[in-house]
Amino acid sequence: MATDHAVSLTYIVPAHNSTATIEGTLKELQDRLASTNSEIVVVENGSRDNTLEVLHKIEADWQTAGVQLRVTSSKKGLGNALRKGIEESRGERVFFGADDLPFGFDDLDKAEKIDHKQHKMVIGSKAHPESEVGRGVLRAILTWGFLTLRFIVLGMRTRDPQGTFAIDGEWVRSVGPQLTEEGFLLTTELTYLAERSGIKTIEVPVRLRESHAAHGSRIRISDVWKMGLGLLTVRKRHRKGVRPVANVA
Image (tube, rainbow, N blue to C red; front, side, top):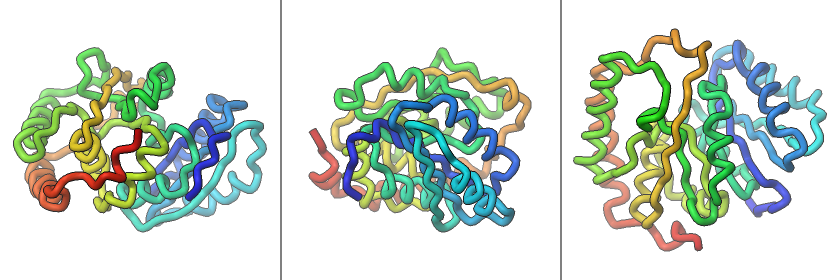
């Protein structure tokens, strides 16, 4: 898709069974992005509830100066949703958010202070030493396990390639066709391609909202094994290196 540089930011929101949160999230985004020449791209992916119907109603009623809302769909899976969002994006900067804004706007506020042409990838990182994310002992152990696996298998230096992302729009659209992961490893695959092409990621601290602090971790010990297999697949797929198109000046 051709880039319209009047759009300063594309904020991508993957939405899966999101009826409980999506309306409030879009209201917060509406207020935060008002008059900024931005767009919100919501990608519904395989919901079993009426998320898509709710989104189409919000889209039909949307009237916010300086903020466009576009609703689209993809197959189920976070990776599928983010890839679709990248394809649809027009912003100079592209942001990967979530349907419940777990960090509020800490991540976006910090990313906007960093030149996206000089630093193409900024991550709202739960692994940053100044982040306040309420880690329990089990989650800390599993996080260390994921970090170690990523380093062993991919040589990855980024500590949290599964946070929120603010990325140079031109670069991410150029590398988007190389992304193939359908699930949660899509952002790890993207970070791997960035590191392979010489891009140094910047990780910024985030604070988990009080409304999310009581949520239990969804990570399980079995996920370490699944991630290991997934990382091997990513390495095999991209072992010949990043195609030149990924290196956008």
